[in-house]
Image (cartoon, rainbow over all chains, first blue to last red; front, top):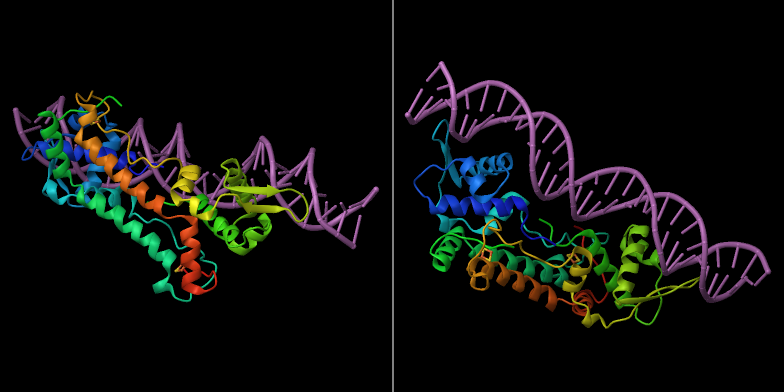
Length: 146
Length: 146
DNA sequence: TGTAACTGATACTATATTGATATCAATTAA
DNA sequence: TTAATTGATATCAATATAGTATCAGTTACA
Ligand code: FES
Ligand code: FES
């Protein structure tokens, strides 16, 4: 069970890069090469992020993409929502029958509680936090071999 | 983003049924009809659960399936693991490069922390708990219309 | 002892989701 | 003018999820 798909993973990495080069336009090609993300695939993700007001673009030579929002205002939860759809733990079980007390149903309650916990965690984890974490750890943005 | 797939969903419902009829064999057909789960699909799930020692079966007429483990000893986390594979938030980002301090990498840390939280929650939620919750709520095991 | 009600085992098909590529028009810096 | 770029969109491939079909073997019981 994979919680983050490639789309989200790539999007995060693209944003980390844009976030650490704020104020300048970075081309899709540069991001693609640097982060090892398939070029055209990345292009699609970037456009999606423009539509969601996370970044802006400039066309033409020397064009590229730039952060629009503050990195601290972009929680990973939002990226998950954009690229994988809202987290929902499960449709309601027992849909065959009619629950007498739906608002008080403990099963539903239980499931939704977990849903909330998951969302809260991903909400606290912002791009800004990740950037700071990475910088603090390495001085330089740098990754691992796995 | 769907956290529980049909397989897990169906498996939980099958176990809730077996768990509330302990000591007797319940046929796949009965479960299928009662819980509205595709018959052959369910058969596969039941066999998988036998392999994982959660239930036992009796062949032949009047045969069927029965709980083996205590319902309280079956956390939803285990079912997720069996039917969807272990929860993993993400492969390591930045795999292109080599992380100097992998054991101290904060990004990895962050991601694994969330992974743990999710697993803990699904670990606390056992079949036994769900059965009790349902019985307490309704007197009878009963569902909702969604 | 025959047969209907069952599970065991396995192969198959369909559909949806995810991941990736290709193409061409429009824009812009140099 | 042209090379470097994004915008927009169509298409394809790979994988995962959901569901079906079939046949052999076992067992209760009429
Ligand atoms: S980025 Fe992977 S261990 Fe650091
Ligand atoms: S089982 Fe769905 S609301 Fe109760």
